[in-house]
Amino acid sequence: MSFYNTFEHYKNFDFNNCFAGITDNQVQAAIQKEVLSHNDILALLSPCAEKQLEQMAQISQKITFQNFGKAIVLYTPIYISDYCDNHCAYCSFNRTNKITRKKLSFEEIEKEAISIASTGLRHILVLTGDSRKYSPVSYICEAIKILKKYFPAISLEIYALEEAEYAEIIEAGADGLTIYQETYDEELYEKLHPAGPKRNYIYRMDAPERACKAWMRSVNVGALLGLSDWRKEVFFTLLHAQYLQDKYTDTEISVSFPRMRPHTGKFDVSFPVSDKHLVQMILATRIFLKRAGITISTRENSKFRDNLMGLGVTRMSIGSNTAVGGHTTGNEYGQFQIADNRNIETFKQVILDKGFEPVLKDWQNITKL
Amino acid sequence: MNDILKIANHEIHNRLFIGTGKFPSKQIIKDVMLQTGAQVVTIALRRIDINAKEENILNYVPENCILMPNTSGARNAEEAIRIARILKESGCGNWIKIEIISDNKYLLPDNWETIKATEVLAKEGFVVMPYMSPDLAAAKRLENAGAASVMPLGAPIGSNRGIKTKELVKILINEIKIPVIVDAGIGKPSDATICMEMGCGAVLVNTAIATANNPVEMAIAFDLAVKAGRKAYLAGLGPESNYAHASSPLTGFLHL
Image (cartoon, rainbow over all chains, first blue to last red; front, side, top):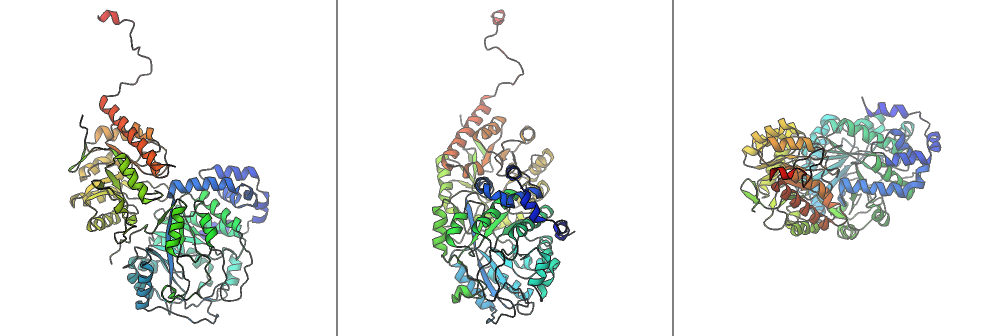
């Protein structure tokens, strides 16, 4: 069994027709339910539900406060290598893009760690490009061992691994994995990934499950918003999250909603996602997956992020830099441009002013140093 | 009357235990403790940052309070044991509230793993306070393993649904000699009163206080409710009956 079996049920499903036929009553019924069916998710993601966003927001807030309290967990990304063998049409790290590549030495990683840790942040997300030559599992494991001296919670956003390799990085001290399917549209996926190791759609889709099997503590899934119709992408993201949570009850499953940002390379966002629709997907997610973490990064601007607090979001990045070594060099030309440039102190104060607790530490790595 | 709850060598006067997750600020946790006079507070290792100054939650625990750190996030006995040892090494005392949860949907505790962790940690000298599903056989095993109390859930964590497990908790109160402390599910002060009237040693409340519009006022309400329930228990509740018993019986004259 794989999530692909669930996916196949809906592969040829007439989404447009289904969404068009959803009525106010169906949306109302879905909002009120404790346990939602697939049809209920479709209702919450439908154009019809847009009329009932306020009510969805009220319910979503209640569920969020009950399960997570008034708290926002903060983290920041650290890019350690941008060498990449893939041809992802939408990404700056695409191997055909002529950018200066860099891989941090272990000394440089430690410098980045010291720089980030001095801001008070305790959760980090380690990112690399997809290159088994430049950033092999052994390099990533060494990096984790250095980083865990400074950070009690380390998540990774790296290329898809084998189950045994996930076990290795967990052993080294990784607690979380973020891996996006990018698009659940199988044909589009092949077009956007014309070559490189990432081309294998099912291997990518099964990666979060392999991490769960290796007993990863938290696994975060998502689709890159802007590549295809967001309603379908979010529907599959939620089904994927549900599939994993039902099957691997001791892994915390969470979802992210990364909206495409300006980046190096020529790629037009084919399906732009509006603020309203991003809110709708957050609310639908919270009503459906009551205990799932929801992450919003600095891809979103400060005003919008501030307004999202209390609507279902549980984790936010801050002090981000998407360039390799950017926390020490200040280089701003990374994987994509960020839209919220506030520093950690400023953002913490904003969170407090809104009546929330900025949570810097929400895990303690328990592997040996 | 001096009504004291004894756990390990501690004398506890206030039977409202406070959980610290989900509060909108750390200062409010301190205010809750000070305003209620609560003596026992539980904090998860995952939220303790020993290296931080202003961010260290431990700085918000009033003096003379008993710190009962918990193993939130542990998925089996081994992880709970590791967390307990890290806490002890970090200077967080020797109390440990074992929370072992391998079910992220309902957050129900794993009694089997909890018993295993209790056996190890009690031998190492910890004051073990295990969070559990109210099951008599498991509670007896925990007692035999050296637990200082058992902490059965009233309803799933954070659900505010009250003491749904009442009949099972009553059995534990009847059969277990160590204190029975209801932890999780208590949503209203009246739920806490019910627990205390039944004979619970204490109750632990978190979500209902932390997510109230006014957490401090809600905590005070819980404190009063716990005291009321405890007093009623000590005073001896009258028997329940399906029909009326007149307060001034009609045949009273026969006994004069």
